[in-house]
Image 1 (cartoon, rainbow, N blue to C red):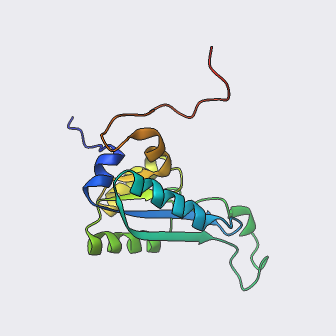
Image 2 (cartoon, helix red, strand yellow):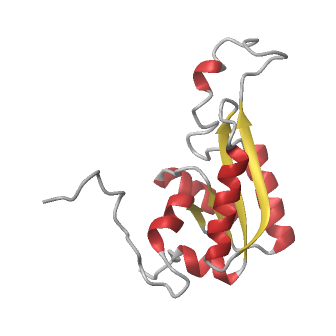
Length: 154
């Protein structure tokens, strides 16, 4: 099977990158999270050409105006695509207009979400974690394991 999976640094250095994130309305630091993600992309040699933030909050005209909204604030809009289909279309439009070659999400992505987003957007999709555990600009792996538990494993 041909190697269809790109290293994040290869995809990021090749073209512009769109960054995206889904955040609960309770989370007030989403701007800082997106800035840190942009800095990580830039540090790997990429250029951020678009930013998309989707906030998940309580629907209704005031806080508490919708039953059930509060319980779902930390959940994705879609188990398949993470964000709403409208936001995914906005990202796809940006990709087409800027010739960006990858999308990096601030959120962790399931395998299903990654595959669905890659198919829908037509480019490689990564999470911020992929960047931090994957590569340097030369393509060397810096750590492909899950985050270590506290303390050495002996």
